[in-house]
Image 1 (cartoon, helix red, strand yellow):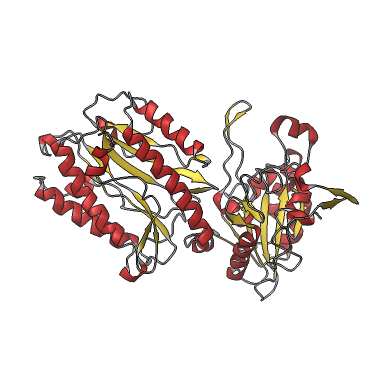
Image 2: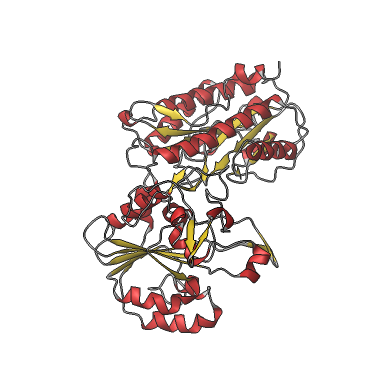
Length: 489
């Protein structure tokens, strides 16, 4: 065991420990800073992590509390199974930057591929569960090419697993766990048998065991398998204070970068895209949280336009949907501004109408307003419909659905669309984080007033719901017409 690397957890789950000390390995005192891991730890990257943190801003103790909450929601003698994301390849041996499965990261803090986590509920008490973490073993030859792995020892010492072993031994380990389990909760895809949704994943670890694993699951008892998603959504939809701080940092960096972009004159979408990427990373975030939308002119009529390669003419608006990621957490922001720095009269009229609706919806992002995402959408839709009518639009029939084709908001967190499938009809509660993003996209069609055709405008902020007021996470991104135009004066 490496006691220095359990900075917040001792043998009694959740009890705080002393400050980091030198580690013992095979009878030798080893400095944790001299060891290599598959991701930053405090001892090797104190410029990125504070003592006790597993990932930026999130401590080992918080990860343990998350696992405890999940175990509390599981029936006795049941298990939850989660898999790390696979490494994705662009072509041949050229891979994409790794992105961990958000549920897996949420519970473990482990940021490497080829890993499996199991939460096993063993008793009635909150602490009566076991955390299994099966990972790639250390391999000097593989690490020469692909970089360090944390390995089996670190799964226990850094990530606080109760049971750990090489992931390649799952074929012999997993049957014993399955045989003593009354229910299985997992979201892994089905493969060999519809009752065994993790077969493909597990067999993929070691091709020599593929057929054996397939047979193993065909012959396994018919243990009920249930979706894990609803349980994970209930955990993830309400953020801890540490999660909100991470999202606020991402929002602050993102907002400042977008405001800085408004001050600049760019020749085209690609230049603006590159500027934001540089600012996100240069100000301490991990980089973009998602592929940004940099849409000049009529490109903004495509909701998820991401080609980002057109030139600006100088008279159009540019719609920018972009946000940075920090410690895995994101902030989602959209701003629309004139590429030449000044709004035309039609652009200003449409923009200010949308902004009024956006401000109204943001003001309702508080628990005492008893709102849901669907109620907020209806508020936005009605406000936009009335505002467009006052601007001369014929709002009969399906007009509002054509001009405002998306929902006004979604949950955010580790995912841009966080807690997928969580009901939009549930009342919003404190520390739930959402977007508010009304938008109008006017097709180039005779149905609409000529001076508004081809204009696409969206205004989006990330909001943390509080008891009596909204906490805007992206406030540094200016959005008032007078403020946007003043940036070029």
